[in-house]
View 1 (cartoon, rainbow, N blue to C red):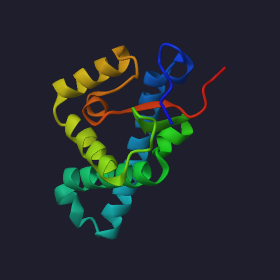
View 2 (cartoon, rainbow, N blue to C red; view 1 turned 30 degrees about the vertical axis):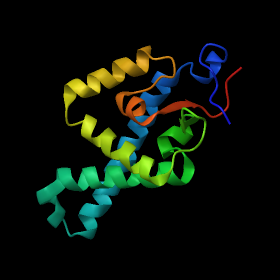
View 3 (cartoon, one colour; view 1 turned 180 degrees about the horizontal axis):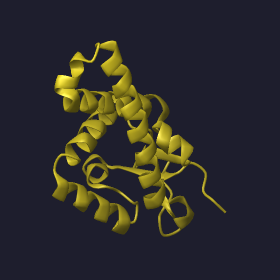
View 4 (tube, one colour; view 1 turned 120 degrees about the vertical axis):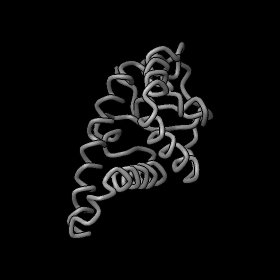
Length: 144
């Protein structure tokens, strides 16, 4: 299986930056909800290390969803799928590295800006972590 060529089949990549932003917002909401559950389950003791709890839940959530379904809930709702540039679904270790890099990029603002610019300008709509890992987001089913 090969990935659709952005020049020959641009419909697979059209609106991907907007959809990635929407998917990110949905995934942040899911992560916040799971973090609140974690706070309750720890009887609010975890409030003392809330950023660590949020990061761990974010990485765990993204890793499980990407490894199992090839998309997070946000990606599913916006009709995106995560694939390697060879067209295959990445393996669980790649999903973990992707998720950890995603969390790490949010801690270094200039790198996040570079990632967003790359998503807007690269043919496969790849962020910085996508380029490092050889992955991308594209439409599950190309729009007409």
